[in-house]
Length: 413
Image (tube, rainbow, N blue to C red; front, side, top):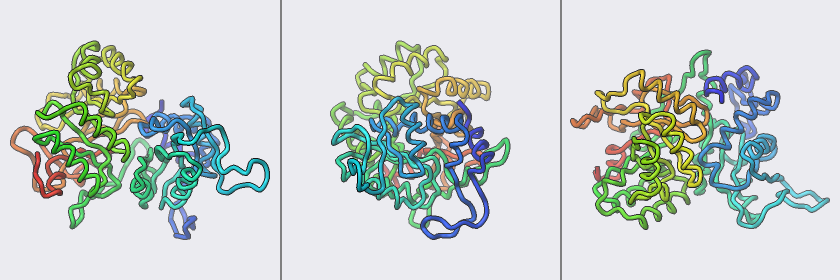
């Protein structure tokens, strides 16, 4: 698999990112144009991008793949092929001849569709296709795009209750330079304390009780549209599996990822039991779980293989937010190498310093705060704001706890 930088470099070489004066479909003027149809000229790049979309966690939510007509039809077909899944063809309008169907292919009422788009802008065309698919009796399980232009389209889809994400932001493509990926520096908050929605927010809910964590998840979804919630199940004296599975159902309906921050770190057979068979039965309700790289490749490979049936994703820890942690550069380098080798099972990393090695992996960055005056908690934790993140890295998920909960006027941490 190619790295994120290699894919972006190839996109530039194919002139998929063009500068000049362009009129967009909406009629708006733009100084750049994204012509992602040009990826059809490079089969290896097309397969690489299709594989990244197929392996995205949201892609597992549906059984059928479809593309937004017409630009994403070819890409969606390859996504289906690399993932060994069926696809259907969505038309913009019925034809007067033949079957006259809006959706061509083999499907049944209630089937769940993963909808593929090349570039998300305002979301107008996506909403039209979503409504069309729903009118034919199918459900849109998720929307995945190659590039997000950052003009509100992703959030518009999420507001419909549909999980949505993109592999790249337009900033990554426009600010790319050889040997380096320069990305935007996202503002942490505005005058009302809300969050820039270009960043996916993971709420770290180290609350006193599980009941409080459930309520905080609901409120933060309603007010901030969080993308993930991070739990320590062993913190909660009132934790029980029934409520955990209720949380999973709630989050599935809204596209929220549940990350259990278990930090597994043992031999393979023990970690497998802790994840699947322990008293908390983590894999029965969590979408993903954190794991240390320390046990080594063989143990982690066995753990990843055990996650295939439950579709639990592993998030590999390369370093942490305490300033005096013992994860030295040699350890971090070895951890990143393991993440690259286990790209099919490891869907992301926890790090304050590194981007993941593979294009389909996400960066979960800990130790972030909305409060620039808060540098630590006096117990080892250190904080940064999103503005203080180095320009060469960009978190896909910004992990925030205390300051985020304070936006609810309730300090539950």
